[in-house]
Image (tube, rainbow, N blue to C red; front, side, top):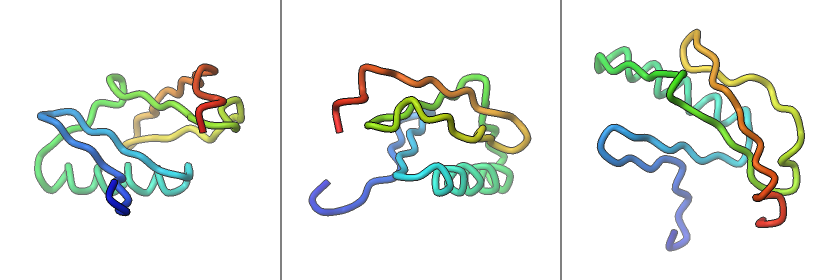
Length: 83
C-alpha cells in the first residue's frame, strides 16, 4: 500500500497477518503470542484459520501454531490463478 509492506491488519479484536513465507508467518505468530502474554491477551487457535494464495496453493505446508495450539489450514483453489 503506497509502496509499504503491510503485514498486519487489525480491526476491533480481529487480526489478519500477511506473509510471503510460512517461516516468516510463524515468526509473526510467535511475536503475537509473546506480546499477548505480556498484555494478557489470548489468541484462540480454534477460531483462527490459514489460507494459501497463488500458484503453490496445493503445496502441503508445515502446521502453524500460536503458543502450543495448532492453526488449521484451508487451501482454496479459487485463489491459484489470482497471483
